[in-house]
Amino acid sequence: MKTNLLYAILFLAALALQQESNAQITGQNPLMATNKNNGYDPILGKLPVEQDDLLGRYQIRGWVADGFYHAGAEIRSIVTGPVQPGGFPANLQLRTGFPDLATRIAITAEGRVGVGTVDPGFDLDVAGNTHTSGNFFGRIHFDDNGSADAAPGAYTDEAYFERHALAGFATAPASTTVDGGLFTLAPGGASQDHQLFFADDGLFHRREAAGAGSWGNPWEKLLSSGDINGTPNMVAKFTAPSSLGDSHIYDDGTRIGLHTSSPDINFDVDIKGDTKADGSLTVTGSAFVGSALGVGTISVPSGFKLAVDGNVICEELRVLLSPSWPDYVFGADYQLMPLDEVEKAIATHGHLPGIPSAREIESEGLPVGAITAGQQEKIEEAFLHLIEMNKQLQALQKENARLKERLEKLEHGE
Image (cartoon, rainbow, N blue to C red; front, side):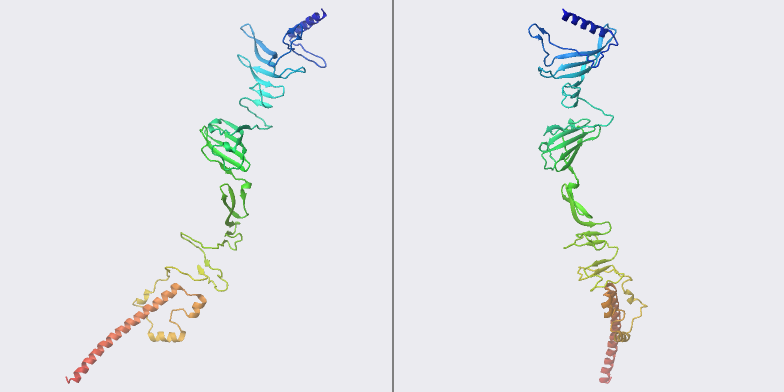
Protein backbone atom coordinates (compact mmCIF):
# COMPACT_ATOMS: atom_id res chain seq x y z
CA MET A 1 0.00 0.00 0.00
CA LYS A 2 2.76 2.44 0.88
CA THR A 3 4.57 1.48 -2.28
CA ASN A 4 1.55 2.13 -4.45
CA LEU A 5 1.01 5.44 -2.71
CA LEU A 6 4.62 6.43 -3.37
CA TYR A 7 4.25 5.60 -7.07
CA ALA A 8 1.09 7.69 -7.18
CA ILE A 9 2.86 10.66 -5.61
CA LEU A 10 5.76 10.42 -8.04
CA PHE A 11 3.35 10.18 -10.94
CA LEU A 12 1.46 13.27 -9.85
CA ALA A 13 4.74 15.16 -9.36
CA ALA A 14 5.83 14.27 -12.87
CA LEU A 15 2.49 15.51 -14.22
CA ALA A 16 2.93 18.74 -12.30
CA LEU A 17 6.40 19.24 -13.76
CA GLN A 18 5.07 18.60 -17.25
CA GLN A 19 2.30 21.15 -16.81
CA GLU A 20 4.54 23.80 -15.24
CA SER A 21 6.45 25.62 -18.01
CA ASN A 22 9.11 26.86 -15.60
CA ALA A 23 9.49 23.56 -13.70
CA GLN A 24 12.97 23.07 -12.24
CA ILE A 25 14.90 20.36 -10.46
CA THR A 26 16.91 21.89 -7.69
CA GLY A 27 19.23 20.79 -4.96
CA GLN A 28 22.90 20.21 -4.41
CA ASN A 29 23.08 17.39 -6.98
CA PRO A 30 20.02 17.85 -9.21
CA LEU A 31 19.15 14.94 -11.47
CA MET A 32 16.40 14.39 -14.02
CA ALA A 33 16.35 10.80 -15.27
CA THR A 34 14.27 8.43 -17.34
CA ASN A 35 14.43 4.73 -16.50
CA LYS A 36 14.04 1.90 -19.00
CA ASN A 37 13.23 -1.75 -18.34
CA ASN A 38 11.75 -4.45 -20.49
CA GLY A 39 8.75 -5.28 -18.34
CA TYR A 40 8.13 -7.16 -15.11
CA ASP A 41 8.35 -10.84 -14.33
CA PRO A 42 6.69 -12.11 -11.11
CA ILE A 43 9.74 -14.26 -10.38
CA LEU A 44 12.66 -12.30 -11.86
CA GLY A 45 11.26 -8.87 -11.23
CA LYS A 46 12.12 -6.08 -13.65
CA LEU A 47 13.54 -7.40 -16.90
CA PRO A 48 16.87 -5.84 -17.95
CA VAL A 49 17.45 -3.87 -21.13
CA GLU A 50 19.13 -5.55 -24.07
CA GLN A 51 21.58 -4.52 -26.80
CA ASP A 52 19.96 -2.27 -29.46
CA ASP A 53 17.20 -1.24 -27.04
CA LEU A 54 15.99 2.35 -27.29
CA LEU A 55 16.57 3.66 -23.77
CA GLY A 56 14.48 6.77 -24.15
CA ARG A 57 13.68 9.81 -26.24
CA TYR A 58 13.29 13.51 -25.57
CA GLN A 59 11.38 15.33 -28.31
CA ILE A 60 10.86 19.03 -28.82
CA ARG A 61 7.45 19.44 -30.41
CA GLY A 62 5.23 22.20 -31.72
CA TRP A 63 1.47 22.50 -32.35
CA VAL A 64 0.44 22.95 -35.97
CA ALA A 65 -2.85 23.55 -37.77
CA ASP A 66 -3.60 19.88 -38.41
CA GLY A 67 -4.40 19.48 -34.74
CA PHE A 68 -1.30 17.62 -33.70
CA TYR A 69 2.03 18.27 -32.02
CA HIS A 70 4.91 17.57 -34.42
CA ALA A 71 8.54 16.89 -33.42
CA GLY A 72 11.18 19.28 -34.71
CA ALA A 73 14.11 17.60 -32.98
CA GLU A 74 14.79 14.60 -30.79
CA ILE A 75 17.47 13.38 -28.40
CA ARG A 76 17.61 9.62 -27.90
CA SER A 77 19.90 6.92 -26.54
CA ILE A 78 20.37 3.32 -27.77
CA VAL A 79 22.17 0.43 -26.05
CA THR A 80 25.16 -0.31 -28.34
CA GLY A 81 26.89 -3.17 -26.56
CA PRO A 82 26.40 -6.19 -24.32
CA VAL A 83 24.47 -5.56 -21.09
CA GLN A 84 26.52 -6.58 -18.05
CA PRO A 85 25.71 -6.58 -14.30
CA GLY A 86 27.57 -3.29 -13.89
CA GLY A 87 26.04 -1.46 -16.83
CA PHE A 88 26.21 -1.25 -20.58
CA PRO A 89 27.54 1.01 -23.38
CA ALA A 90 25.10 3.31 -25.11
CA ASN A 91 25.22 6.21 -27.49
CA LEU A 92 23.53 9.57 -27.60
CA GLN A 93 21.87 10.66 -30.83
CA LEU A 94 20.69 14.05 -32.01
CA ARG A 95 17.97 13.77 -34.64
CA THR A 96 16.48 16.45 -36.86
CA GLY A 97 14.76 16.54 -40.23
CA PHE A 98 11.52 17.13 -42.08
CA PRO A 99 9.21 15.45 -42.57
CA ASP A 100 10.94 12.51 -40.83
CA LEU A 101 13.59 12.74 -38.13
CA ALA A 102 17.04 11.28 -38.91
CA THR A 103 20.16 10.94 -36.78
CA ARG A 104 22.58 13.79 -37.54
CA ILE A 105 25.07 13.50 -34.67
CA ALA A 106 25.95 10.46 -32.58
CA ILE A 107 28.22 10.24 -29.53
CA THR A 108 29.41 6.73 -28.62
CA ALA A 109 30.20 5.32 -25.21
CA GLU A 110 33.90 5.65 -26.12
CA GLY A 111 33.46 9.37 -26.73
CA ARG A 112 33.64 9.21 -30.53
CA VAL A 113 31.54 11.75 -32.37
CA GLY A 114 29.94 10.92 -35.68
CA VAL A 115 28.40 13.47 -38.01
CA GLY A 116 26.14 11.78 -40.55
CA THR A 117 26.95 8.34 -39.11
CA VAL A 118 25.82 6.48 -35.95
CA ASP A 119 28.97 4.31 -35.91
CA PRO A 120 31.99 6.68 -35.99
CA GLY A 121 35.35 4.98 -36.42
CA PHE A 122 37.37 7.96 -35.20
CA ASP A 123 37.19 10.58 -32.48
CA LEU A 124 35.47 12.77 -35.08
CA ASP A 125 34.02 10.96 -38.08
CA VAL A 126 32.22 13.06 -40.70
CA ALA A 127 30.27 11.37 -43.48
CA GLY A 128 30.11 14.27 -45.93
CA ASN A 129 31.74 17.61 -46.59
CA THR A 130 33.30 19.78 -43.87
CA HIS A 131 34.14 23.46 -43.63
CA THR A 132 36.38 25.23 -41.13
CA SER A 133 36.47 29.00 -41.01
CA GLY A 134 39.08 29.10 -38.25
CA ASN A 135 42.28 27.21 -37.55
CA PHE A 136 42.48 23.43 -37.74
CA PHE A 137 44.36 21.59 -35.01
CA GLY A 138 44.79 17.85 -35.12
CA ARG A 139 45.96 14.91 -37.19
CA ILE A 140 45.06 13.92 -40.74
CA HIS A 141 44.11 10.29 -41.23
CA PHE A 142 45.68 8.23 -44.04
CA ASP A 143 43.47 5.57 -45.57
CA ASP A 144 45.26 2.25 -46.05
CA ASN A 145 44.43 1.56 -49.68
CA GLY A 146 47.37 -0.77 -50.17
CA SER A 147 47.87 -1.31 -53.87
CA ALA A 148 44.77 0.27 -55.42
CA ASP A 149 46.01 2.66 -58.14
CA ALA A 150 42.84 4.72 -58.39
CA ALA A 151 42.42 6.72 -61.61
CA PRO A 152 42.13 10.54 -61.59
CA GLY A 153 38.40 10.14 -62.17
CA ALA A 154 38.09 8.54 -58.71
CA TYR A 155 39.00 11.86 -57.03
CA THR A 156 36.51 14.74 -57.19
CA ASP A 157 37.08 18.19 -55.69
CA GLU A 158 39.12 16.89 -52.79
CA ALA A 159 42.49 16.44 -51.14
CA TYR A 160 42.99 12.78 -50.26
CA PHE A 161 45.63 11.06 -48.14
CA GLU A 162 46.50 7.38 -48.48
CA ARG A 163 49.15 4.85 -47.62
CA HIS A 164 50.20 3.15 -50.84
CA ALA A 165 52.44 0.26 -51.84
CA LEU A 166 55.02 1.04 -54.52
CA ALA A 167 54.24 -2.25 -56.26
CA GLY A 168 50.59 -1.21 -56.53
CA PHE A 169 51.14 1.53 -59.09
CA ALA A 170 50.48 0.67 -62.73
CA THR A 171 53.61 2.68 -63.52
CA ALA A 172 55.72 2.98 -60.39
CA PRO A 173 58.12 5.85 -59.65
CA ALA A 174 61.87 5.15 -59.71
CA SER A 175 62.01 4.47 -55.98
CA THR A 176 63.32 1.70 -53.73
CA THR A 177 60.67 2.11 -51.03
CA VAL A 178 58.04 -0.50 -50.17
CA ASP A 179 55.22 1.66 -48.78
CA GLY A 180 54.84 5.41 -48.93
CA GLY A 181 52.38 8.20 -48.33
CA LEU A 182 50.23 9.25 -51.28
CA PHE A 183 48.63 12.70 -51.47
CA THR A 184 46.13 13.44 -54.22
CA LEU A 185 44.93 16.96 -54.97
CA ALA A 186 41.88 17.24 -57.24
CA PRO A 187 40.85 20.93 -57.27
CA GLY A 188 38.13 20.33 -59.88
CA GLY A 189 37.08 22.61 -62.70
CA ALA A 190 39.59 22.85 -65.56
CA SER A 191 42.57 22.13 -63.28
CA GLN A 192 44.57 18.93 -63.47
CA ASP A 193 44.78 16.32 -60.74
CA HIS A 194 48.16 16.03 -58.98
CA GLN A 195 49.69 13.26 -56.89
CA LEU A 196 52.69 13.31 -54.55
CA PHE A 197 54.26 10.04 -53.42
CA PHE A 198 56.34 10.36 -50.25
CA ALA A 199 58.92 7.57 -50.51
CA ASP A 200 61.91 6.61 -48.37
CA ASP A 201 64.28 7.99 -51.01
CA GLY A 202 62.51 11.18 -51.99
CA LEU A 203 59.36 12.88 -53.19
CA PHE A 204 57.76 11.99 -56.56
CA HIS A 205 55.09 13.85 -58.56
CA ARG A 206 52.72 13.10 -61.43
CA ARG A 207 49.73 14.90 -62.95
CA GLU A 208 46.85 14.12 -65.27
CA ALA A 209 43.69 15.70 -66.63
CA ALA A 210 40.83 15.65 -64.13
CA GLY A 211 38.45 12.76 -64.73
CA ALA A 212 40.96 10.75 -66.80
CA GLY A 213 40.63 6.99 -66.77
CA SER A 214 44.27 6.42 -65.85
CA TRP A 215 47.51 8.19 -65.01
CA GLY A 216 49.32 8.60 -68.35
CA ASN A 217 52.07 11.02 -67.41
CA PRO A 218 55.20 9.53 -65.78
CA TRP A 219 56.40 10.14 -62.24
CA GLU A 220 59.04 12.84 -61.81
CA LYS A 221 61.27 13.09 -58.76
CA LEU A 222 61.49 16.42 -56.95
CA LEU A 223 65.16 16.96 -56.20
CA SER A 224 66.16 17.70 -52.63
CA SER A 225 69.48 18.30 -50.91
CA GLY A 226 69.87 14.53 -50.61
CA ASP A 227 69.91 14.24 -54.40
CA ILE A 228 72.55 16.95 -54.85
CA ASN A 229 76.26 16.30 -54.30
CA GLY A 230 78.37 19.18 -55.54
CA THR A 231 81.41 21.38 -55.01
CA PRO A 232 81.03 25.14 -54.58
CA ASN A 233 81.49 27.08 -57.85
CA MET A 234 81.35 23.89 -59.97
CA VAL A 235 78.53 23.94 -62.53
CA ALA A 236 76.11 21.07 -61.83
CA LYS A 237 75.13 18.28 -64.21
CA PHE A 238 72.84 15.26 -64.01
CA THR A 239 74.91 12.35 -62.73
CA ALA A 240 71.81 10.12 -62.84
CA PRO A 241 68.20 10.64 -63.98
CA SER A 242 67.31 12.09 -60.57
CA SER A 243 70.56 13.38 -59.07
CA LEU A 244 72.94 16.30 -59.59
CA GLY A 245 76.71 16.44 -59.23
CA ASP A 246 79.84 18.22 -60.49
CA SER A 247 80.54 18.85 -64.15
CA HIS A 248 83.97 19.85 -65.52
CA ILE A 249 83.07 23.57 -65.60
CA TYR A 250 84.15 25.96 -62.84
CA ASP A 251 82.57 29.41 -62.48
CA ASP A 252 83.10 31.69 -59.47
CA GLY A 253 81.47 34.71 -61.08
CA THR A 254 84.82 36.12 -62.24
CA ARG A 255 86.80 33.23 -63.69
CA ILE A 256 85.71 30.22 -65.73
CA GLY A 257 87.68 27.02 -65.92
CA LEU A 258 87.27 23.90 -68.06
CA HIS A 259 88.71 20.77 -66.41
CA THR A 260 90.21 22.97 -63.69
CA SER A 261 88.83 24.32 -60.43
CA SER A 262 91.55 26.99 -60.10
CA PRO A 263 91.67 28.99 -63.36
CA ASP A 264 94.64 31.35 -63.65
CA ILE A 265 92.89 33.73 -66.04
CA ASN A 266 89.30 34.72 -66.78
CA PHE A 267 88.86 31.69 -69.07
CA ASP A 268 91.22 28.80 -68.45
CA VAL A 269 91.03 25.51 -70.38
CA ASP A 270 93.04 22.62 -68.95
CA ILE A 271 92.15 19.71 -71.21
CA LYS A 272 94.57 16.79 -71.38
CA GLY A 273 93.75 15.85 -74.95
CA ASP A 274 92.43 17.16 -78.23
CA THR A 275 89.93 19.96 -78.68
CA LYS A 276 87.71 20.16 -81.74
CA ALA A 277 85.57 22.98 -83.07
CA ASP A 278 83.32 21.97 -85.98
CA GLY A 279 82.02 25.48 -86.50
CA SER A 280 83.58 28.92 -86.68
CA LEU A 281 85.77 30.27 -83.90
CA THR A 282 85.89 34.02 -83.41
CA VAL A 283 88.45 35.68 -81.12
CA THR A 284 88.02 39.42 -80.63
CA GLY A 285 91.22 39.81 -78.60
CA SER A 286 94.61 38.13 -78.86
CA ALA A 287 94.98 34.35 -79.08
CA PHE A 288 97.97 32.50 -77.66
CA VAL A 289 98.80 28.86 -78.36
CA GLY A 290 101.53 27.11 -76.41
CA SER A 291 102.98 26.97 -72.92
CA ALA A 292 105.81 29.55 -73.03
CA LEU A 293 104.08 32.49 -74.67
CA GLY A 294 105.43 35.82 -73.61
CA VAL A 295 108.03 34.16 -71.38
CA GLY A 296 111.39 32.72 -72.28
CA THR A 297 111.42 31.35 -75.82
CA ILE A 298 108.77 33.64 -77.33
CA SER A 299 108.16 37.30 -76.71
CA VAL A 300 104.80 38.29 -78.16
CA PRO A 301 105.02 41.71 -79.85
CA SER A 302 102.19 44.10 -79.10
CA GLY A 303 99.55 44.57 -81.75
CA PHE A 304 99.52 40.90 -82.87
CA LYS A 305 96.34 38.81 -82.61
CA LEU A 306 97.76 35.26 -82.74
CA ALA A 307 100.96 33.82 -81.32
CA VAL A 308 102.02 30.15 -81.50
CA ASP A 309 104.79 28.54 -79.46
CA GLY A 310 105.63 25.76 -81.92
CA ASN A 311 105.10 24.70 -85.52
CA VAL A 312 102.01 25.46 -87.55
CA ILE A 313 100.77 23.22 -90.37
CA CYS A 314 97.85 23.76 -92.72
CA GLU A 315 96.75 22.86 -96.24
CA GLU A 316 96.47 26.50 -97.28
CA LEU A 317 97.34 29.81 -95.69
CA ARG A 318 95.67 32.89 -97.04
CA VAL A 319 96.86 36.39 -96.06
CA LEU A 320 94.75 39.44 -96.81
CA LEU A 321 97.25 42.24 -97.47
CA SER A 322 96.87 45.88 -96.75
CA PRO A 323 98.07 47.75 -98.81
CA SER A 324 97.45 45.89 -102.05
CA TRP A 325 99.59 43.40 -103.92
CA PRO A 326 102.67 45.08 -105.56
CA ASP A 327 101.40 45.28 -109.16
CA TYR A 328 102.42 48.92 -108.97
CA VAL A 329 105.85 47.76 -110.17
CA PHE A 330 104.42 47.47 -113.68
CA GLY A 331 103.05 51.00 -113.59
CA ALA A 332 104.36 53.50 -116.15
CA ASP A 333 105.55 55.89 -113.44
CA TYR A 334 107.36 53.27 -111.34
CA GLN A 335 111.03 54.15 -110.82
CA LEU A 336 112.94 50.90 -111.26
CA MET A 337 116.23 50.88 -109.34
CA PRO A 338 119.17 50.33 -111.74
CA LEU A 339 121.11 47.13 -111.17
CA ASP A 340 124.30 48.95 -110.30
CA GLU A 341 122.44 50.74 -107.47
CA VAL A 342 120.98 47.40 -106.35
CA GLU A 343 124.55 46.04 -106.30
CA LYS A 344 125.75 48.96 -104.19
CA ALA A 345 122.78 48.54 -101.72
CA ILE A 346 123.55 44.84 -101.31
CA ALA A 347 127.20 45.55 -100.75
CA THR A 348 126.34 48.22 -98.18
CA HIS A 349 123.44 46.55 -96.27
CA GLY A 350 123.84 42.86 -96.98
CA HIS A 351 120.23 42.32 -98.16
CA LEU A 352 117.94 43.38 -101.00
CA PRO A 353 116.47 46.86 -100.74
CA GLY A 354 112.93 46.73 -99.17
CA ILE A 355 113.51 43.27 -97.66
CA PRO A 356 114.00 42.91 -93.84
CA SER A 357 117.45 41.96 -92.70
CA ALA A 358 118.26 38.74 -90.87
CA ARG A 359 118.60 40.70 -87.61
CA GLU A 360 115.12 42.18 -88.03
CA ILE A 361 113.63 38.75 -88.73
CA GLU A 362 115.37 37.30 -85.70
CA SER A 363 114.14 39.98 -83.34
CA GLU A 364 110.66 40.70 -84.74
CA GLY A 365 109.75 37.51 -86.58
CA LEU A 366 108.91 36.89 -90.21
CA PRO A 367 105.95 38.97 -91.46
CA VAL A 368 104.52 36.46 -93.95
CA GLY A 369 102.26 38.91 -95.77
CA ALA A 370 104.78 41.75 -95.94
CA ILE A 371 107.73 39.55 -96.86
CA THR A 372 105.70 37.78 -99.55
CA ALA A 373 104.68 41.13 -101.02
CA GLY A 374 108.31 42.34 -100.83
CA GLN A 375 109.56 39.20 -102.55
CA GLN A 376 106.89 39.61 -105.23
CA GLU A 377 108.05 43.20 -105.71
CA LYS A 378 111.64 42.01 -106.24
CA ILE A 379 110.48 39.27 -108.60
CA GLU A 380 108.56 41.77 -110.69
CA GLU A 381 111.53 44.17 -110.67
CA ALA A 382 113.80 41.29 -111.71
CA PHE A 383 111.46 40.51 -114.61
CA LEU A 384 111.55 44.14 -115.70
CA HIS A 385 115.36 43.98 -115.67
CA LEU A 386 115.25 40.69 -117.63
CA ILE A 387 112.84 42.19 -120.16
CA GLU A 388 115.15 45.20 -120.60
CA MET A 389 118.19 42.96 -120.89
CA ASN A 390 116.33 40.78 -123.43
CA LYS A 391 115.58 43.88 -125.51
CA GLN A 392 119.24 44.85 -125.40
CA LEU A 393 120.26 41.30 -126.29
CA GLN A 394 117.91 41.25 -129.29
CA ALA A 395 119.29 44.62 -130.46
CA LEU A 396 122.84 43.31 -130.16
CA GLN A 397 121.89 40.18 -132.07
CA LYS A 398 120.46 42.31 -134.90
CA GLU A 399 123.52 44.58 -134.92
CA ASN A 400 125.77 41.50 -134.91
CA ALA A 401 123.89 40.06 -137.86
CA ARG A 402 124.37 43.27 -139.89
CA LEU A 403 128.09 43.42 -139.04
CA LYS A 404 128.50 39.77 -140.03
CA GLU A 405 126.80 40.43 -143.39
CA ARG A 406 129.11 43.38 -144.16
CA LEU A 407 132.17 41.37 -143.21
CA GLU A 408 131.21 38.58 -145.60
CA LYS A 409 130.75 41.09 -148.45
CA LEU A 410 134.19 42.60 -147.84
CA GLU A 411 135.77 39.18 -147.86
CA HIS A 412 134.29 38.43 -151.32
CA GLY A 413 135.40 41.85 -152.74
CA GLU A 414 132.06 43.15 -153.30
